[in-house]
Image (tube, rainbow, N blue to C red; front, side, top):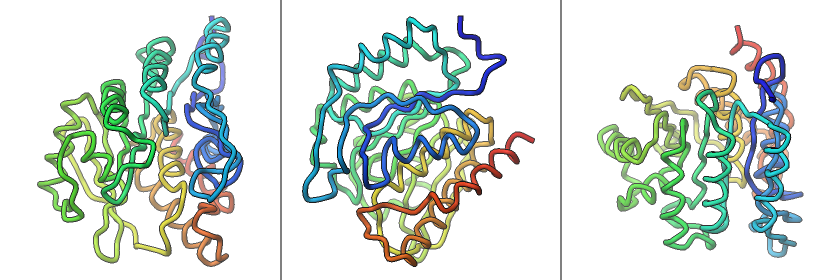
Length: 286
């Protein structure tokens, strides 16, 4: 039996592997590792680079996923956290649900990043059936990290950039809580010169945390944000503190990426600030 005592904490990160472009597993592995946690990858697909580029190699891993983690089950592996990101098909949603049922126990924190769209539009691969299937994952979540578009998709509410007031955001969060969401953060809310992250705690309390709107919109920022949240959840950092740390880390990385004139599809230069996360992890443990 793989007991959780006397070993390093672990997170199973379920996402695609894109070799270039700073997103998905290539973001989660270094960030979660820097925060003192072993990151155990479950690839949903392998890509040469993410689909925001004109051309890319893609190898779907759906058929292999159950065989992959069946070996972990034979090893009796246990996880302190399970973090799910972009999923490409309804079948993958079913596979992830099965993974959670097999590996999550009462002490496992499940973080669901329902990557479905942005700016009021779904991603090209998101069918109505797939969006409905992802809604079923919410009931497994301890922490849910949708952006405003995804929160509207999950709840069936019409999207509007004007959904920025506390009343509207609370209504959305109450609907997400009814689906099974507990701690929720709605990310990337445009508030003039600021970007807001609306924090809804499982006790019903809420608050908005803002950072200055900096630079251009970039690939992979949601993956960076959710990876920090996932590691903090396992490290028992208070949820609001975790959201603030993740937002500041993303903001700092965007600012540096713009200063270096990094193309937007290449993501953000989070590598420059990984030491900040190590320090944050140490502080969070005190």
